Image (tube, rainbow, N blue to C red; front, top):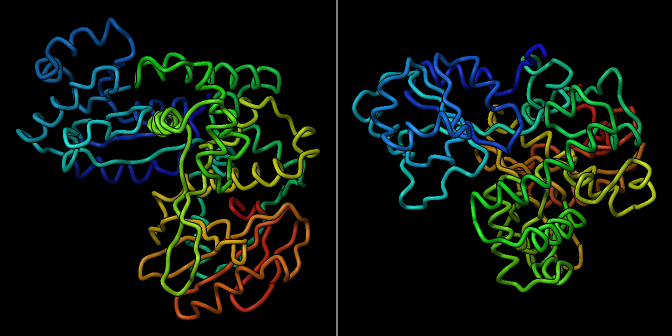
Length: 410
């Protein structure tokens, strides 16, 4: 399969030209190894026992024997290799020496984490629709376009509602998204989930019951893109609070789930401070819950959740290369008096607010919460966007537009 340019390719090349070690982290099977291998003189696959033995026995000596740049793939299998990288970089900080990839969150050691100041992190997620279309090296990230006031043009082949759901359920894992038909893709994704719940979970946090962990992941998937308290999740999974907290930490460390924090401000009272929980890729919801587009279209609640998760996945992958350097939040007041799906806080406190609607032609009423936020923060509110499932871009008010979801990659 021909290599499709990834959004982070340019950033990796720039950093590798000036820094000794780059740490590429992201979910399993999202293309990290393929991308890193294009820049490596030596590839050490630590999840292959034959290659891991020597590194495990004496990582410092092993690294000295390899041609650079060295790609250390799946570092978490031999975590001691990071200490050896630290020592090698401290002794010789030449640029372009190491590429490290892994599919677990890279600060599991807490205070003992050896990467601080030595490993520069580059997050890499599933392929966006832009990347899958071969446009990864072209175009400006969505939030940068919004900030610049550019017209949010839809893609030439803008989908309808069913088309968006099919894109969401196809997901961003390169192999099934690019190579497989629907039946094989579903089998691949179901196998991926099974692997996560057994082998990967055991590797990161041994002793967890995969049956109960699956029940918790199912509850999480049913509530993806939701502001849901812990009790709802652990009661649905039939476990206690302590076990649920351990499962959420585990799934977060495995880069399966992510919590979008609540935005806070002293100008807004009675804000809900709970995070908004997302699966990292909407295709996982399909695999965990056995969903297809027809089932989702019959379930209004799941429809909105899946579209929201899909949009967040597209934006999350762009964050590392977005010039505005945004941080993503959600906003909600008690009783839903103000609720915004996504709030990007940019440098200088500028705000871009986004709503996601399963509506082909949203009216100004769909933007009322965006307008409330604009009126409350007139100095820092930069733009509001209602992303919808129709084909047109149009104005809904001062600094607020409606745009097709496909304008994310259009």
